[in-house]
Image 1 (cartoon, rainbow, N blue to C red):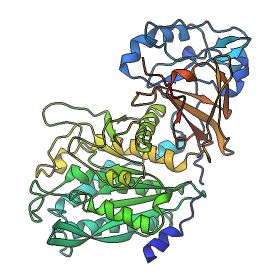
Image 2 (image 1 turned 90 degrees about the horizontal axis):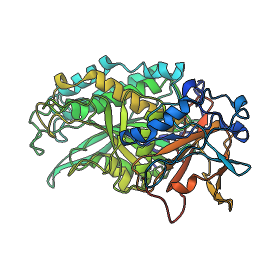
Image 3 (image 1 turned 60 degrees about the vertical axis):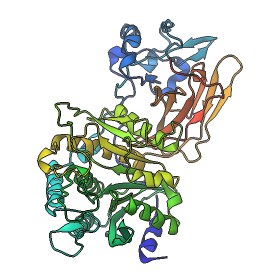
Length: 520
């Protein structure tokens, strides 16, 4: 095993709790409905449908009904039974959480989609607010200044070529490591041979640094961004290739997230890696996957997060979207990568982040690729964050820093970092043994293994053909005793919530039955 592999293999993987309080899971008082007495453990047990704008009209009537029923107080559950919601004119009525009391189902409040249930605590906000657009501007400015980051450009000349970019990134990791008190380890340069043509090659480097985890079996998460660039002529190593957005923006976000998160250690191990060779068929990330595999570490990687091209909010034709990022994953809607993308989107909704994280239906844009492919192809769930609007074609010499929208880049970086926090520091269900039992009366119970460090759980529900989660609710218990609504959905997953308020990684989705429902 190489020195580098030994260094990684020795990383402990075990927990650190960020101190934060968990906001009440109920909405504002005017939108609450009393909870049945035998759901007192459910911490307001709120069912939250996640269908987007097309559900607005369907749920307007339900919202008015909720407003009329007063405050959500567990002590008032016996005072008045909520009325039965009327079925809406659709193929399948919207789901309701039912708890059987003397044979009569009881229903907590239903809230319109995209309603946050948690505000990041003061400490989490302090982390998010440290994202500094000016630091990222300085990173992008340097990367653009080296003229080109082509894999065959100079590796030795000062201030020019891919070698200058690689040395700059290694120096930044080094500075972060020194200021982190050792939380972020010294950077490692992983060498591989990059081919421009069958007869033209050069030694390139992936540069990475590690924050070791603190919890056994919490796994590893890879946060990656490629730093190479090309001109429209992919084979020309001398042509101007500024690559400010593609992918100076991703590298800037990578370094900024590493800087901020290096103040802490987390349950899971984090590896921050800047890849070379992405523009030439992902050669750097493919080599890195092999490197992890040879070091017997790939099996410990729970997910890969690819940050690639996140600095433009317009398409150069007058169309602007400064409120969302796309999340690409895999073609299959039931793959672990697609589920990871759904996690990213729902995290944005739960915490009311500044940027909507929108799960896409494909691996990437038509005819395009990214470093997340290398991990997905190896069986490791991976997703890509990318701006919704694209201003320049790949390799454009006009991809300059003057066209970066730094407010957008800052908000995108915050949203990505919040998702990383949930994966790295949220409590993980150890075995994820989800059991759905038929009670024989039209209701089912849901059980899963409790987590000692959790102060509650979230249950997420999805129709079989839905791209995203359609509904979720919270509970303090590791079970739901009786509900007639599970059968309306195709899949269920559960996540634990820590004392710091962070929701952890989701269990693999559980199929309700072979005859699973479709969305209305």
